[in-house]
Each structure stands twice: as C-alpha cells, then as structure tokens.
Length: 205
Image 1 (cartoon, rainbow, N blue to C red):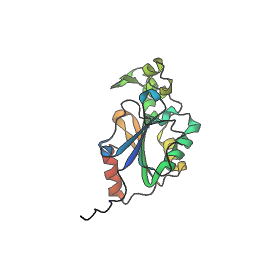
Image 2 (cartoon, rainbow, N blue to C red; image 1 turned 60 degrees about the horizontal axis):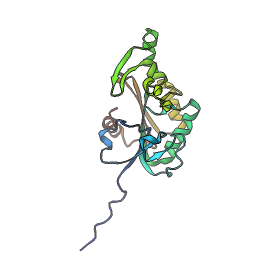
Image 3 (cartoon, one colour; image 1 turned 30 degrees about the vertical axis):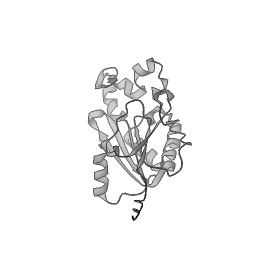
Image 4 (cartoon, one colour; image 1 turned 135 degrees about the vertical axis):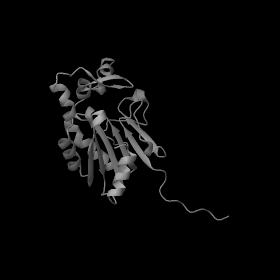
C-alpha cells in the first residue's frame, strides 16, 4: 500500500492570551488547536504567564494570537514588551487580533456624568464606564486584583503601539455596539484586500 504524503504543516495553533474562564472565541478558530495563557493559575490555563513574558512559548511556534480584553491589564510600560513577545512567537505569516476597551467612546459617558451607569449587560453582570476604564469592579472586590486595568487605549495610541512593535500591516476597527477597538496586526502584508476583508469578517471585526 502506498503511503500518503504528508500534508505539510500540522494543525494550526493559536494562543488565547488572557483566556480567563469564558473568553469568547471566534468560529474561525474552531478547527485550530488552542493554547490557553493566563496569569491566574486557578483558571487552569495551558501556560501560566504574564503576556509581557511568554518565554515558555517557543519562537515562531503559533499561527495566530487572540487577545480579547487582556492587554489593558498591563501597565503602559509593559505593552511594548507584550507586543514584542507576540511577534516573537508568531510564525512569519501569522497575525494577532487584539481587542481593548475604546476609551475615546467611553469618554462620552464620563462627560455626561454617567461614570457608574450601566453601559451593557455581560455574562458576569452589568458593566459601567468605570469598569471599562479601571477594571471590572465586582471581580476586583472578590480579590481578583489582576482584573484591574493598568493602562488604556484610544485609536491613535493603539495604532502607534502596533506600528512600533513592527507589524507589517495593521487594521483598526471600532466596534460601536460593544465600545471596543479591535486591531488586526499581521506579520507580513496580506495577499490582497479581499483576503484581508475575509479574515476580518471571519474574526468578527
């Protein structure tokens, strides 16, 4: 019997950094192998680490990074280190999808003196502008101090961080319904605009 030829690269791998207990994952990654990373060992991640130090993850070992509401938990000086780590562990054709609270939009709630009013309901409970700036209050009150926010982002600052990290192509999207900024950062330019748009749509951007 003739042995089948290898199909090349094994199953695609993505890092879910700051995975938490119920981090939402796009359907795009459903067939990929997930490696969960979190600083909180009680969540039983595959890798216990700060995203500013992924030294236990090998260079060029993952195809994508999913980072939803995580990077704002760092202090501002740690953000360049985290993005440098993202680039180090991504393969040459990999990409990172990073989602953060949109502080420019949230500022409208503050200027209207609605800092503590509910903006939307999450699975964990109501979320206020105060939560989106400084971290989810109920979780912090339960002792989950890693949930506190150390920094924040508006579009220009977010874009500058990604540019300075060395990503070759960057697209930002403002998600009005959830008051989020979503950044798609690619290690190398996408094949064409159609390819990029399809990827963004598949990631829910």
